[in-house]
Amino acid sequence: TATSLSLNGVAGSAEVLADRALAGYLGELRRLWAAFTADGSGEAADGIRTAVSEACSTLRQEVRVDLPDGTRLTGTAIDLDEAGRLRIRIGSNGSMQTVAAGDITHLRYE
Image 1 (tube, one colour):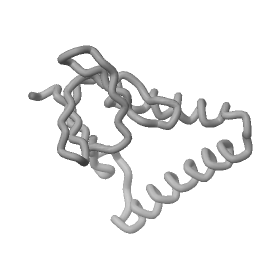
Image 2 (spheres, one colour; image 1 turned 135 degrees about the vertical axis):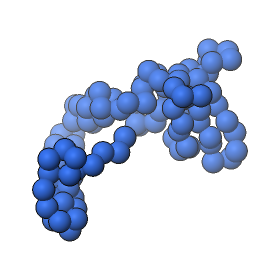
Image 3 (cartoon, one colour; image 1 turned 180 degrees about the vertical axis):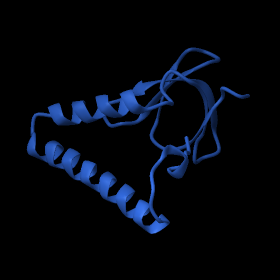
Image 4 (tube, one colour; image 1 turned 30 degrees about the vertical axis):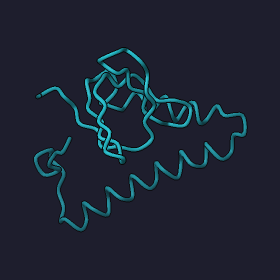
């Protein structure tokens, strides 16, 4: 979902805002990477997957997935697997499909 920084009270030139946004993103990415690489037990990976799942607006939504080979799936985005791939419950038969790459469209307006 897009937003306007200026409409949300954030001041500064485009360059300053871009620098601040990138610095914040990279700082958080560095923190997560340090936690991930410091822990050989997999707990950090589970924590990162949980955090991503909680922030992911796609989960629990009806979606259409256009796969790279042209296949189209329609169903409900259920969760992320241990590798971070999206798991979809297919609407027509209830089977589960794991998606590593594809274009995801939310069907809330269709």
